[in-house]
Image (cartoon, rainbow, N blue to C red; front, side):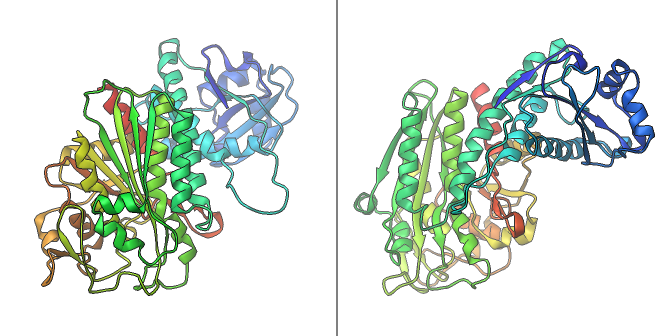
Length: 498
């Protein structure tokens, strides 16, 4: 998909179709009004007849429109003008791309009204267009035996009119958004695969493929079970004991800055299927536990984005990949295990396995002396209860780092919210028999899970993102959402620029 920005009048642009927005009551914004004037009030006459109401997200394709270089005209509803904002524009753009994808249009010209610059500046305007287009055009990588639908022919999207002074920023945004969309497709593809395909070994092979694709900048190392044992990752190995699938520990290194610069470490939970182990989950929606590796997919996608965007920073991606299954060898409630850090853990609930594998991965990150560590995990149902499916949770031992992530979410619309993480929560993890327990009851469950991870990050600048409520959607539109890659890409891009 090619994205371009133009500054001249929209009506003069060559393409298959011109897209303009219409507010309710037939009101046209500046771009629409200019097109209407060029067409000798043809659009006004059409709206006066009541053929299109301008209701938010409605679309109407006019197949023949004399006077347009593009030939066809697509009207997109923007709702009441007084209520037009970034959220309405976002949904209108989704409706636009969806409508275009149902046709044979290949090169549309987009002249939709845009939100105020205080809501979306030139760079993020361009970036949002490319990201939303990529996300809307994404098709689930299903394994159906029937013939797959042909992809839509959309190949080029021209955006404008943009002021001359803004063209550079919009074009940079379009390029960044296109990279996020490409890497986001990787994230969603990995998440949507069934667990009998996307195993720990499959994830490791995908990491190898990523390194081959970006061989100039990305290196990979895969630790098998014997190497994991030599690294004394007792918590990680305890979780894998009940599975026939061997675990893998994935290490990806992206080098975009000078060799001596400290990297940012990205750690992702890679449980390719989570039954809960001996503390077995309820059957309803257990199929969705194939998404329990979306933290791992986020790390792979972030490395892929950094390489595509050629970010000037160093990254380390760490992914403990395994299954959590029940059998005669599986870890049991009451078992005590030793972590790679030397701390011991009493396992009170085997379904709190993500924090166990992450504890050893976070400890492994120390060897790189990172400038910051961020982990991503579909960690707790408690996070979904607290924040629903709209915001990812951010916690950590460094408020400035946590704020960076929250602000990146606000800029991109990939929302996150910081929860408190004080010593009071860590006290709930006390155990009579080990250094700590792996659960602390229902109260503040998302925070006590982070407090557990915090015991392995002393001396590190660390933030934790619980993406259990945002990594995928359920119901008839079930599938990986691609979040929080947009947030992560913005966070990394800002760090690289700084």
